Length: 312
Image (tube, rainbow, N blue to C red; front, top):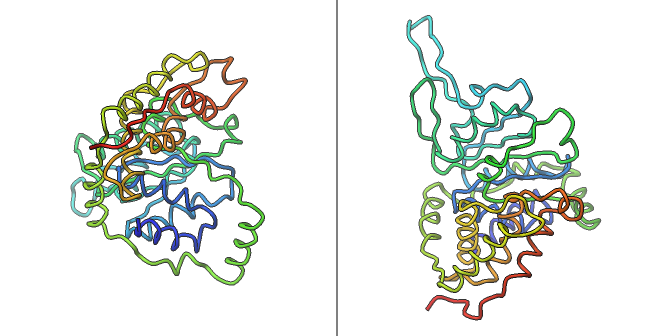
């Protein structure tokens, strides 16, 4: 899809060597999904979010989560205006298009839970008043895995399940890092990025991706994968129905950007690790031997791939 190639080309001026990440972000955006970015510090998570927001002509806000951040700091408050002698609404940073929740696992569980309604319902409730969020709306949250036991509050399964996909940016290769040095030696490429999508275009794409079809064989293949996670020896908690819907939508998104009107088993296999890995809880024995992604890959190997791949 030319739009995705343009996005990769433009974002490649700022974030080097992350074409697949850009593709996955775009799939999340057109499916109204939220993204959890997990990687060590300094790998470009914040820059990625800011660059992505600029290219899709979206309003961008950032919250730096710390233990003293309150739910009202996220959603907003009603404050008394002494000049007008009345209470006025002061919306929080969630009233935006793309929200960067930086180091979300540093916030207390109470503050983390304030994101639940925002992410799922796309609205906030302040003193009994419900306010819809702008469209499009997407949360890009980051967490630092190396500090998971140092003054942090691990995200509960209920909140992990609300993230459409989880991405690990990882370290760049020597060639990519050399290009980073050369790119940032004399300038700030973020300032030179162009707007590629209007909000109206994004909303149209969000409608179009829903038209991508699944055959009954592909649907059953997807469901067998989901149910295998619920009956796997190394998995204590399997994927929820919300996870099954997310995998279907992610596969639709991959087919859509490849300009196909139907989902293939390959779409499901490709998207499964990103969509399902953070939605399972390994048993004690399983967690000692493998990562979540490795177990999901094992599950994929257990399920026979259907021969019938397309929708007629």
